[in-house]
Amino acid sequence: MDKLPKRTEINTNFAWHLEDIYSSTEIWEKDFAISQKNIDDLRNFSGKISTSAQNLLDCLNKNNEASLIIEKLYVYAFMHFHEDSTNTVYQQLSSKAENIMIQYSAATAFIVPEILTMSEQAIQNIINQNNFKVYRHFLENILRQKQHILSAQQEEFLAQASEIGGAPQTIFTMLNDADMKFAVIKNEKGENVELTKGRYTSFLENKNRRVRKDAFETLYDSYLKQKNTIAATYSASVKSDVFFAKARNYTSSLSAALEDDNIPVAVYDNLIETVHQYLPLMHRYVALRKKLLGLDDIHMYDLYVPIVAEADKKISYDEAKQTVYKALQILGKDYTQALQKGFDSGWIDVYENEGKRSGAYSWGVYGVHPYVLLNHNDNINSMFTLAHEMGHALHSYFTWQKQPYIYGGHKIFVAEVASTCNEALLMHYLLQNTNDIAYKKYLINYYMEQFRGTLFRQTMFAEFEKITHEMIEKGEPLTCENMSEIYYHLNKQYFGDDIVIDEQIAIEWARIPHFYNAFYVYQYATGYSAAIALSEQIIKQGQPAIDRYLDFLSKGNSEYSIDLLKGAGVDMTSTEPIKNAMKVFEDLLNEMESLL
Image (cartoon, rainbow, N blue to C red; front, top):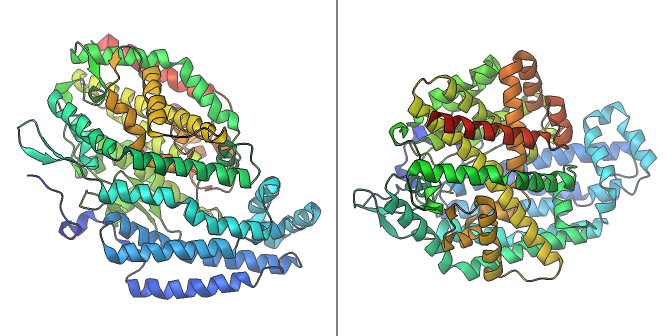
């Protein structure tokens, strides 16, 4: 039976180099001690920063210093934990890192409220001083959110409560990544193979329909056995979101989630409403897929299998790297040099092992470099995942070259633009460099699958989140039964009448980790729409669009996301980017039909 390797069995050539952050746990512990002193030093500023501009400047500088070290502690500990959640050393380190992060949050909770005890004119005078130039956007953003900032005592209370508020996510992560076990299924050869979350997608892409069905039913049977526990966990997470939103005087948990980056709630609502208008395109795609697969009836487990069997290619990790590099050469020498550096310098953790976190992400530390976690399979999906996560990584890389630490992050609203633009450019390259009609049909189908999985599916997720949060806000309970009913009917609405909505899909909400980071997933859909627009500009306009795009990558969060995208050439306050993306999807449908 094919079993996952243990972490110690992974070839170091395919493992990330976390020693670039800390060469040993002993050095980590030294920084941990420094962080505890930094926290004490920060507490001493309480009551003083409103008395003089110099005190405020000293406090903000000290806060940056303390935050960077704690971020290093946190990222190092949790990335080690994510590579093997059964490792007790990093279970302990991640717990310590989480605790000191909470201490830091509590110790610095006074800063923003105390700034706001100053008059608006006094703050404006400080903003206009040259030595506060770096903090201008930071301070202006505080003024914007004034009505949602509480007293120092209340802010400290909320910071301490955040550990409880984050418990549902922690519980779900341990259940989903460490404790959840799946049964053995038989592959297309009749051999016993252990089902894992990492292998699940590969099974759904299998040509053998019995394998797809078995994987689908086996996976969801495991979640159904935990349905009440997960329902209670998710309900607690939503209640936490609602509590913190009310505590900060927001009208809803949705507005609270969007306010931090100054995103109008209309952007969220417009997304759902606009996608609803174009659901007939998704229904048409499902009908086309059913026809091309030659099925009398199509099920949820038939949505991932390639519909052009002869073009079902295996793509090794090395081949994936080479192809991604060639595809992104359109962005110029600076971009591709940074990309190659990431490939060659231990940024990437490539393969799945026992206890490793599922999925993929990019993370890292300012002043070190970005990292990427993968669970690579030799297929086209994993090649696109590599392009996607390196988009995140290089967004950080270029930002860290140009921005000070305080603006070194990037909001998810724009982060998904960088990652998905890479995917769009990769698809363009692949379509332009094949004369094989069968492979072209395969790629067009894959592109349509990106639309289905990102623009349509993530919007469906976003709608589910909106419904569940509104239920709690109205005082209605969330149970496994009502959430499953809601989720089942959303699938019927989004996928239409030409597909059998299998009863197991009703529990899919129970396995989505992103639901524990409320109102996160809509940004995949908005980001996808923006990325399509930017990739089209890069391809058609050339250097001017490339220059705007690279400038966008280097700005971090020094501006609001909506403004960053406007500077790059896309206005997300309008519905046009979503409608334009839907036009691309419709063109793909037309082209696929013409190739039949």
